[in-house]
Amino acid sequence: MDDVIRQVLQMETWAVVGWSPGRDSERVASFLEARGKRVLPVHPVHGAPSLLDIDMPVDVVDIFRRSECAGAHVDEAIEIGARAVWLQLGVIDEAAAQRARDAGLLVVMNRCPAIEWPRLAAADRAERFVHERAGHRT
Image (cartoon, rainbow, N blue to C red; front, side, top):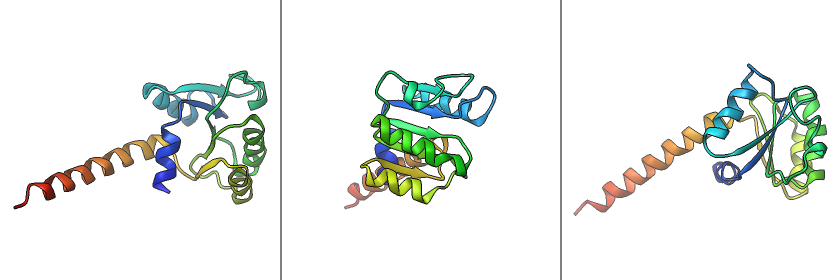
Protein backbone atom coordinates (compact mmCIF):
# COMPACT_ATOMS: atom_id res chain seq x y z
CA MET A 1 0.00 0.00 0.00
CA ASP A 2 2.87 2.40 0.73
CA ASP A 3 3.94 2.27 -2.92
CA VAL A 4 0.45 3.30 -4.04
CA ILE A 5 0.32 6.08 -1.45
CA ARG A 6 3.70 7.38 -2.62
CA GLN A 7 2.54 7.40 -6.24
CA VAL A 8 -0.63 9.30 -5.39
CA LEU A 9 1.17 11.83 -3.20
CA GLN A 10 3.40 12.70 -6.16
CA MET A 11 0.41 13.72 -8.28
CA GLU A 12 -0.13 17.45 -8.78
CA THR A 13 -3.82 18.37 -9.08
CA TRP A 14 -6.18 17.37 -6.27
CA ALA A 15 -9.94 17.92 -6.24
CA VAL A 16 -11.13 17.94 -2.63
CA VAL A 17 -14.75 16.79 -2.51
CA GLY A 18 -16.54 18.11 0.57
CA TRP A 19 -14.13 21.01 1.11
CA SER A 20 -15.55 23.33 3.76
CA PRO A 21 -13.99 26.28 5.57
CA GLY A 22 -12.87 25.54 9.13
CA ARG A 23 -13.11 21.77 8.68
CA ASP A 24 -10.54 19.01 8.29
CA SER A 25 -11.02 19.19 4.54
CA GLU A 26 -9.74 22.77 4.50
CA ARG A 27 -6.77 21.87 6.70
CA VAL A 28 -5.78 18.95 4.47
CA ALA A 29 -6.22 21.12 1.36
CA SER A 30 -3.91 23.73 2.92
CA PHE A 31 -1.42 20.99 3.78
CA LEU A 32 -1.39 19.86 0.16
CA GLU A 33 -1.11 23.41 -1.17
CA ALA A 34 1.85 24.05 1.14
CA ARG A 35 3.56 21.13 -0.58
CA GLY A 36 3.02 22.58 -4.04
CA LYS A 37 -0.17 20.79 -5.03
CA ARG A 38 -2.95 22.51 -6.97
CA VAL A 39 -6.12 22.07 -4.91
CA LEU A 40 -9.60 22.47 -6.38
CA PRO A 41 -12.43 22.67 -3.82
CA VAL A 42 -15.59 20.74 -4.68
CA HIS A 43 -18.62 21.84 -2.67
CA PRO A 44 -22.02 23.17 -3.74
CA VAL A 45 -21.42 26.50 -1.98
CA HIS A 46 -17.66 26.82 -1.50
CA GLY A 47 -16.24 25.51 -4.78
CA ALA A 48 -17.14 23.69 -7.97
CA PRO A 49 -20.58 22.10 -7.52
CA SER A 50 -19.31 18.70 -8.67
CA LEU A 51 -16.28 17.05 -10.22
CA LEU A 52 -18.05 17.26 -13.57
CA ASP A 53 -17.92 21.09 -13.32
CA ILE A 54 -14.11 21.25 -13.14
CA ASP A 55 -12.66 22.41 -16.45
CA MET A 56 -9.12 21.08 -16.07
CA PRO A 57 -7.55 17.65 -15.65
CA VAL A 58 -7.67 16.24 -12.11
CA ASP A 59 -5.09 13.75 -10.92
CA VAL A 60 -6.53 12.86 -7.50
CA VAL A 61 -10.07 13.06 -6.14
CA ASP A 62 -9.82 13.36 -2.35
CA ILE A 63 -13.18 12.50 -0.78
CA PHE A 64 -14.34 14.05 2.51
CA ARG A 65 -17.88 12.67 2.50
CA ARG A 66 -19.71 9.98 4.45
CA SER A 67 -19.02 6.45 3.26
CA GLU A 68 -22.53 6.06 1.86
CA CYS A 69 -21.96 9.11 -0.39
CA ALA A 70 -18.44 8.22 -1.52
CA GLY A 71 -19.42 5.86 -4.34
CA ALA A 72 -21.08 8.58 -6.40
CA HIS A 73 -17.92 10.70 -6.21
CA VAL A 74 -15.74 7.73 -7.12
CA ASP A 75 -17.94 7.21 -10.18
CA GLU A 76 -17.51 10.89 -11.09
CA ALA A 77 -13.74 10.53 -10.66
CA ILE A 78 -13.79 7.64 -13.12
CA GLU A 79 -15.94 9.68 -15.52
CA ILE A 80 -13.61 12.71 -15.53
CA GLY A 81 -10.52 10.55 -16.05
CA ALA A 82 -8.86 11.09 -12.67
CA ARG A 83 -5.78 8.99 -12.04
CA ALA A 84 -6.53 8.22 -8.38
CA VAL A 85 -9.12 8.44 -5.64
CA TRP A 86 -8.29 9.03 -1.99
CA LEU A 87 -11.01 8.24 0.54
CA GLN A 88 -10.26 9.99 3.81
CA LEU A 89 -10.09 8.50 7.30
CA GLY A 90 -13.36 6.76 8.09
CA VAL A 91 -14.54 6.84 4.46
CA ILE A 92 -14.81 3.22 3.39
CA ASP A 93 -16.61 1.89 0.32
CA GLU A 94 -15.06 -1.34 -0.91
CA ALA A 95 -17.37 -1.62 -3.92
CA ALA A 96 -16.55 1.91 -5.09
CA ALA A 97 -12.84 1.27 -4.54
CA GLN A 98 -13.06 -1.85 -6.70
CA ARG A 99 -14.89 0.07 -9.46
CA ALA A 100 -12.06 2.61 -9.41
CA ARG A 101 -9.38 -0.10 -9.56
CA ASP A 102 -11.24 -1.84 -12.38
CA ALA A 103 -11.22 1.48 -14.28
CA GLY A 104 -7.44 1.76 -13.79
CA LEU A 105 -7.36 4.31 -10.96
CA LEU A 106 -5.08 4.06 -7.96
CA VAL A 107 -7.03 3.84 -4.70
CA VAL A 108 -6.16 4.90 -1.17
CA MET A 109 -8.88 4.36 1.41
CA ASN A 110 -9.32 5.19 5.09
CA ARG A 111 -6.12 7.26 5.15
CA CYS A 112 -5.20 10.95 5.31
CA PRO A 113 -2.47 12.56 3.19
CA ALA A 114 -1.57 14.91 6.07
CA ILE A 115 -0.70 11.80 8.11
CA GLU A 116 0.75 9.63 5.33
CA TRP A 117 3.10 12.27 3.89
CA PRO A 118 5.11 12.78 7.11
CA ARG A 119 4.91 9.07 8.01
CA LEU A 120 6.43 8.05 4.70
CA ALA A 121 9.01 10.84 4.84
CA ALA A 122 10.13 9.60 8.27
CA ALA A 123 10.27 6.00 7.02
CA ASP A 124 12.35 7.09 4.03
CA ARG A 125 14.77 9.00 6.29
CA ALA A 126 15.12 5.98 8.59
CA GLU A 127 15.78 3.66 5.64
CA ARG A 128 18.46 6.02 4.26
CA PHE A 129 20.07 6.20 7.70
CA VAL A 130 20.19 2.40 8.01
CA HIS A 131 21.70 2.06 4.52
CA GLU A 132 24.25 4.80 5.19
CA ARG A 133 25.26 3.18 8.48
CA ALA A 134 25.56 -0.23 6.81
CA GLY A 135 27.82 1.31 4.18
CA HIS A 136 30.22 2.61 6.86
CA ARG A 137 30.83 -0.80 8.47
CA THR A 138 34.18 -2.40 7.83
